[in-house]
Image (cartoon, rainbow, N blue to C red):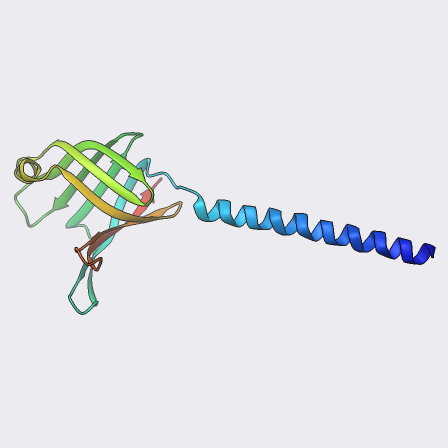
Length: 156
């Protein structure tokens, strides 16, 4: 009888131990999945993609003659672009929000070339896929198909 009671107690202990471990594991997995990474800091463009109607994409890598940086504080953004073959200057400054995978930039001012765009559209919105050291911003058409994407890495 003692053996049966001991076996029953071990079995009950094992069931509750597994339940606690499983709940902890599931909670950790959910927490990691729902973790929001911050955009704060400096980011450099690695490449961008131009999507065609059939779903294929042309990749254009960043180079010494084409560079782009984005810098985020808690609420402000500044970005700049260098295109050696272009006589225009490109930069913009404004506010941003980043919630639920959507980056919204509300630009206040920029270079002369950028001010023409800001005067017609000062709010820009992208879908963001982010991890600790990289992010991709994606522009989609009205049907949800990707049109354009930029891929950045964090500058340390």
